[in-house]
Length: 407
Image (tube, rainbow, N blue to C red; front, top):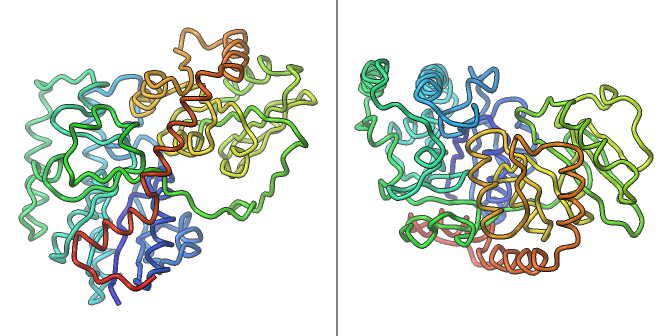
């Protein structure tokens, strides 16, 4: 029985895409371990993984790893430095905990997220093959989110000291990892990307080691981990509004959406990502608000999704051919929003355009646009052909000559 370890940062947008892959691997007879914090132990266990618990130092969004680009409209050298220092702090704290937790039960394969250094270092210490799990648009020497959406000063005086500190840390890990190797996007390690090649910017310029498997969507039970069940309205398509679970405490934004969509003759569903619906005040009859909501339960009944345009939520919407009105808040989301607009899969509202009237007009235009509907169906077909969780599991097996069980 092959032992496969998932070493992914404690961020929902990075963990959630992997869970269906875990379930597929477990169904094929592999033993899967997943390093998780308490918040994610239940979904990982439900997917079929044995949870390996640890405590993270990432207490707030500002500690998110650099690859998450969870800062402002543009990613600066100061943002990069702050994020890398957070990565060093996280890796130094987590490595001994996970090394002890796994003990002599070393995995045969490690599935690592490149923005979480602890995973890459552990895999190198164990000397086991690695697969990269990339939850953002993929990067190479030709295109990356960092290059396209950064205002980066390479002469920042703190950068030489930062790279010296990273190098010194890696030297103490007893591996041959260097800062260049750790941060490289083209090191030949196989990559699983959770979107189809057709959605990737310059998708034809990525080598065969990058596997665009499309969204790996889990089976849904109609109930979230927070115990909520949602019932769709009879015979009507809804407008779904969500800013995800990071940078989402925006009662001003949700208030604007309510003002825009009240009494428009269509149901509106707000998912607040942990916010308190009571803070929005009395709601119009056509609007409902939920602190948490499983988006995959709502999207089959939606025709418009007002979204911050995280890649995960965009893939969930596009898998149901739902048009997206993107209101990005950070560079990673801006990249996804731009791609949605370029491919004609929805609309993007710039910061200066975000008013109740602009949103009202955008929802009306998108829901009535037959050309967008055609392009949504074409992208839906691309996503189905990409293979999803089965294709991702095939990559993990095939790259390392793991014998497949008959199925």
